[in-house]
Length: 191
Image (cartoon, rainbow, N blue to C red; front, side, top):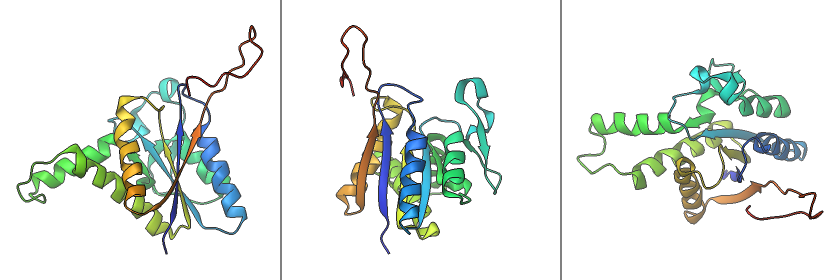
């Protein structure tokens, strides 16, 4: 069974509601009878959210398998009424750490280890593994941060590569649409 991947991104402002949007999409699909899982990507170098200051990053969600994850994973679990394993949280620290460990063990057979393809391959592997292990019809993948932040670019690249490789991929972008009082109309730039 091939899963469908829905990548949820956000623009220009943090805290816009990507996590709630992702969880809501998952709930709608689940209500239609589909098996859904979720993946949260956090583009920071920390291994997990366990050592982050709550005042800076928000609540830490603890998974059934003792993972300390971004609070959005808690939204997914509550909305979908499923337990999501800690490996469904991907951080830049985990991805780079895994690739460097493989290089040190000689798994790349002396090749020059590079961001493309080695880091992107690891990102894609982790996303696909989450989908396969859940036997999901749909895998909702939230890419943390905002579009345009340098640290998120490699994740957008991996998502585009998955689509180019024939995976069923769509993108949902959550945008802030302000209505300045002096104009009285919605403005869409920059989105």
